[in-house]
Amino acid sequence: MTAAKKLARSETSLEAGRVERVREAVVVRLASGSYEARRAKSCLVAPEVGDKVLCAIEPEGVYVLAVLEGREGAPTRLAADGDIEVQARGGQVAICASKRVDIASGGGVAVTGAEVHVRATKGSMAIDELGFFGRLVQAEVAKVALVAQEVDSRLTRLTQRAKRVFRFVEELDQTRAGSVDLRAESMIGIRGENAVVSARVLAKIDGEQIHIG
Image (cartoon, rainbow, N blue to C red; front, side, top):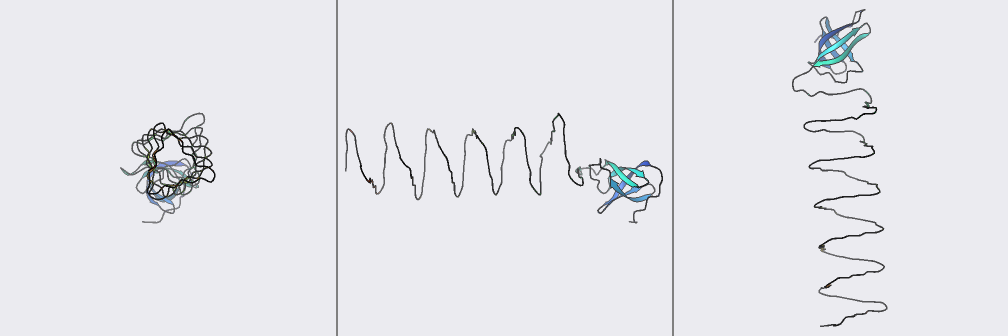
């Protein structure tokens, strides 16, 4: 491939060409030869090798104004040097795709809004460390499965209402409290290979009938 020529024109004109190289600089082949070109600020579509582009030929250089035609089946890539800000004053911004939408960042991703809604048939999250700060959490689910090595909760008040509760503890189940009040409408059963009930001041058993042994 011959080296890109230096532009030697004094007038401004528009001409279509083909992209030959997009490494250090964009090289476009025009009717008079190959020239190094710069992307216009409004040309957000990144040109690829073989694309047909519209160029503005000016005395100070060649500018790629738009990508007219690309390879069939090749993705359209939007790229810019520096930051990109999409803003709709008084309106909405929608990103739609028939298959999927990916958001990737080498740094952080921030979502800020008065309300955030996420709806999907299935979802998954993989986060090494997660911190949540909020005032109220309301959840309605049919089933919850949790697998964890440790769970540490610090609560001012905990209220639970359930029809049936089953707990299976392989090793130690310990409760430490200022007072413990256990009440049942029908029966309380305590069974174990050994049972120890001790009190520092008073131990009392009260009932219409008491059977021991």
